[in-house]
Length: 71
Image (cartoon, rainbow, N blue to C red):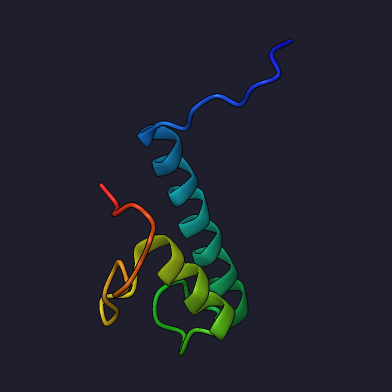
């Protein structure tokens, strides 16, 4: 049994992103009754969405960052 973690691939990342977005859509639909336009997002839903898809109103990476850029 190996004691190391396998490297994550782009396919793993894409699959996780898809699952998060599907879960967000399901939770939103359950809360509002409409999977697309049932009202505003809750702060938690916004956090999940922006963490997965990014916030187009915010610069990424933020100024002064010390971590690698995406892509």
